Length: 296
Image 1 (cartoon, rainbow, N blue to C red):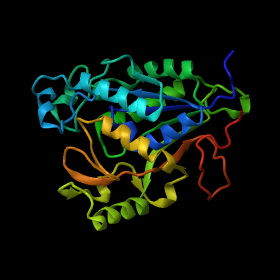
Image 2 (tube, rainbow, N blue to C red):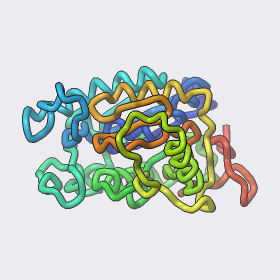
Image 3 (spheres, rainbow, N blue to C red):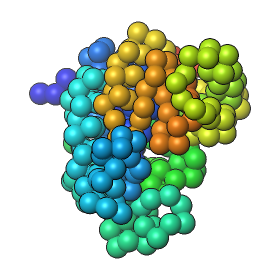
């Protein structure tokens, strides 16, 4: 029989590397604590840019082999985080990276963005019913920063939670297998501003530019943050996972940059907003455990 006391966390992300940047410390912490951590990635990230010059031929406008490379990078990142359960939505390569909003790739027949939500959601429902997570993490309705695949991942995740069964969010029914809480990944404005101030004053970054607070996904007023997970003890694992995504991320100490070469801080504490379910702490306080208040 399955151990009903085991904590099960499901994360839904759009592309390989999104998980390590935004939730890497959280994933490493819960995996180390013995929770079952399941990551679902919706596309292979085929439309991404490539940082190392010797791998530039992999891009979609040349050899179009970046997706396969990123599958390997994601596997390496999960090993660094201690996560053993990773799946691609609908199977590897089922949904194609749609590119940034408004580009021609949005209109591809197999683009994730073009797929009707009710066509993609059943693929996640199958995983939900198999894993039976008590907690799910995904993006906010804007996908953090407006990327079509992030927006679609949010829509698919929320719809799948609804379709997984009418008992979802019904704590009064006493079913320990249903999703009790859904969180959206967030970043408090004050923390983002402090991080960039630290980056600018350190003089330690090797990157030619520095990003702005508005470049970060999910930045909101501090009052919207309902949970913070201290992953300081796992910061090295998060950084190692980010390094594993070598085509997409360059890491320099406590900072990193994407293909635009604009430095950003690596945040060891990660932040969330409770979107569905009941908080496990009194009103006005922040949770320090995503499973706070979850029965069992």
